[in-house]
Length: 147
Image (cartoon, rainbow, N blue to C red; front, top):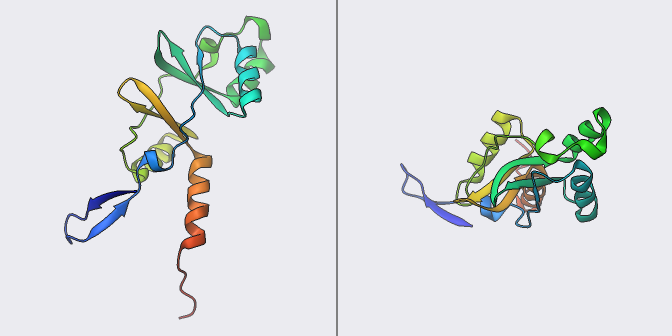
């Protein structure tokens, strides 16, 4: 965990950073790949989304939901990742606070937030990551009972 000083009180407090909670293993796919290939990779890896690359740069994100929509409305063999990916992507840095990330996810009504260090993807923060973190936190929190 990362340390940050409280501005007014001078009391030291702990602020969790995105890198403390994010998933580090991000799978990428080319924007020219087929939707069928994207679905196959997601099924095999258990990932709910893939970061989409074009010339080694992240240009979008494709989710299970994007694949399902594409499969339901088009011929699978003609649909490319670039046709259905979410773009432009909203990103966050690994050293940004978790509270900032939560605000972005809530404001943008997003489930996944790619974590970028410069031009390189270093992780992804998902609603599942947050649920796991808050579940773990709730096990250790002290609860007051009574008046």
